[in-house]
Image 1 (cartoon, helix red, strand yellow):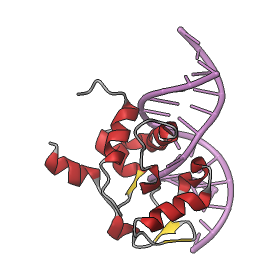
Image 2 (cartoon, chains in turn green, cyan, brown):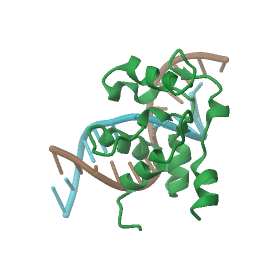
Image 3 (cartoon, chains in turn yellow, red, orange):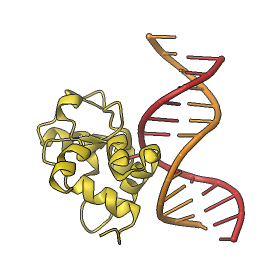
Length: 114
DNA sequence: AAGCTGACAGCAG
DNA sequence: CCTGCTGCCAGCT
């Protein structure tokens, strides 16, 4: 591996996010080793839009559990409905029980992959 | 090759 | 307590 660009790594992690589960940019960035590049993680998501393998970017939220990237989906309501469709409660563009639904790649993938 | 942009995060005022 | 600015890393023009 390692032939993939930083973006691909992000896509890989996001694609492994289980159904009805969410993660944050900092978690992914930290897992990739680029903790300070939380912006790059989110930027990768924006590039995932229109990609062949659909990236569940709607499961990626910010540190606050807020649907920050909803504008990149084209429709703010779309992202929220997608999350609700997975059983996630969203209110005021913020995920309820975010901490409970939080999916840590460093923990899930870390014990399985590495 | 250099500079700018960008779906965040953390610190300062 | 809330608002604003800078810092980070990688990709794109």
